[in-house]
Amino acid sequence: MSNSWPGGAGGLAATTSREAGGESTASSDDPVWPVAPRYGAATLADVGPSLLSCLGVPGERNILGLPAVRRVCLLVIDGLGADLLHEQKAAAPFLASLAECGRRIDAGFPATTVTSLSSLGTGLPPGQHGLLGYQVRVPGTGRLLNGLRWDKDVDPVAWQPESTIFERAAAAGVAAVRVAQGSFKHSGLSIASMRGADYQAANTPGALVARAATAMAAQPRAYAMVYTGDLDGTGHACGCTSPAWRYQLSHTDRLAEQLADALPAGTLLVVTADHGMVDVPSARRIDADLIPELQEGVALLGGEPRARHVYAEPGAAPDVLAAWRETLGESAWTVSRDEAIDEGWFGPVDQRAAPRLGDVIASARGDWAVVATVAEPRESALVGMHGSLMPRDQEIPLLLYQGE
Image (cartoon, rainbow, N blue to C red):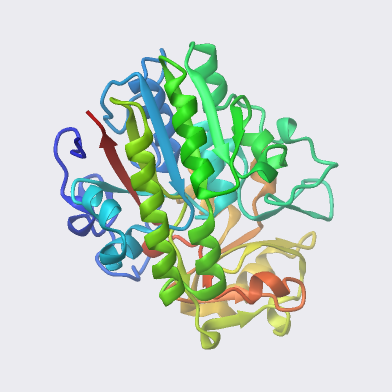
């Protein structure tokens, strides 16, 4: 058995900041100015093309330098931040052993499930696949699209028309499989960004392992994505520093180990996450529903507490930006749409996607959040949150295991 990284690696503990151009750009847990995700070098958008390349699919770039194989299984552990794994490595001995030779990559902005799964599913950065957050405005309307619940009036394929990793794999003769909870099969998010897979419904950890192993064994060349969301759900409900989260991590670790043991010999198991997580204290929650300065001129409040899209009334964008900047102060990086695009927060932004972005975008600093207790009571009550450009939201593990 092998878990070594091609070309060597320093492990998660040794790679404690995101880098650009070889120079560390995040020397603390709260940088003065945000570091844009490393699109095209080390983000979730780079995982899919690298996996297809290592499977021999023509035209795909192996950006991450993965080894050539015939079968790849990608395990996505929702909510497993790199810092969280490092801090709780005693609860996850298998994943911790892989982390010794693993590396950190960036989720992409916002660091949230809708956006990150779409980056994994398409191999594109957020600005190109266009699933730009938990809730974004449908251009030309006065309503928000919730990427997890979707809206039957929005065509998922029209919203995200580019080919998916699964479609490109199948076109090249590689069996494409997705293993996840059955209720996700026909969701708008699945159709928009992960269509083209042979969907294997699995509603328990044991079923996830069995379905993935069986599907991989049946094919000479195969790519499978396996998704588990229990760790994320525990973090949201109980906090990512809670005993409950630590116990759930142990269950997730066992799932990963069982999957590694069950896969056919020679299969490359790649483990990653969609985002990290931060516990937000009640004193660090700014309630937009109770502060007049955060309401004036605002038509819609989108995004989520640690990554807000603020949509202004016509002509009010400059005033809204000024009010949000002054009110949030150092609790968030607050910028205009154009500034976020210029700073590379979303990667290159397609023209069809730009109108979905907020006129004002706020990325929380530290352990702050902008909640909306009236409009979003459920989201505002969560203990663990994510979405920001902060390293604890962004940095996720990329781990390899290959059985002999």
